[in-house]
Image (cartoon, rainbow, N blue to C red; front, side, top):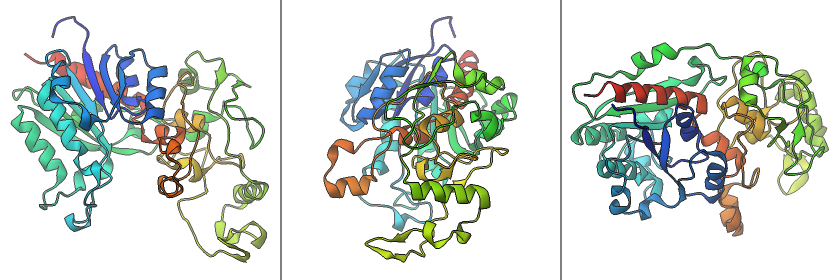
Length: 391
């Protein structure tokens, strides 16, 4: 390695959690590709580099990526793979365009020929099956091997590396150097760190209630940071953005108060129970175990997903989490602002209603889909060391 700036390409970049972590280590993101316009706007307004292109990767030619051959040291990203089944190939969703996006990632690697490859995905990635019965991950490793890369991969829980969240994700690192032995878990040992709990992560953020603020409002901090993590996450910010709560109905607020005080959904009084859709005279017996779970301030936060806004109740306020609180748990600094609508209807419902202008990744989606920047910075460190170790 020389003293020149290390450059990376970020594919399927989303809001840019991966890019943000790499930038903190002095790596220049020479190109980022993101298809969704709201996520791309968030990326463009928060990153040092202005090289984010809002585009469908399948529409970008080999010649386009060929311009980066010899100019990008790292190709990284997390191709969507929700179209695959972890159980059996016959449950694979045929025709789902997401089935083929991992091949686009590999295509870019084959054209750009970076020295390091980093792939991040859901923890089930190593269990996905192809139509011919092979594991998808075997196809990835075999393909990268044919390109000259030695690979190592594992499922990693970010809470073991200082991130206040029980989030298990698949990471794969490939090095274009068959002489260099790599083991991702061995390389990560130096970064083991105890994470703070949920309360320690978010307790300094202002108390907010539904209808107290309107969309887009910002607010001052109401107290000083209470610990090192909070100080780090403020990152010099003087106001709090993306901290508007969901506009819950009075009944929902009361239900949340009950759950905060009692903790058992099965003991909800009838006046706080949900009613059957289309018949308000009947109480619904449907149970959604993943909805409205009261969080424990003294424990590590559970996994923040793309649809987390209805999953969790704040540990001591009768409301769901705000985008800012989830961003804190994901280790986005308070200076990182999310754009697009805060939340939208489900994609299926939007499609059914023909509301195409909202078929984008809302702020909750952007946060939940991201690689925690603090974890990304650790991966950036590892990539730098691998590059330095190359002959």
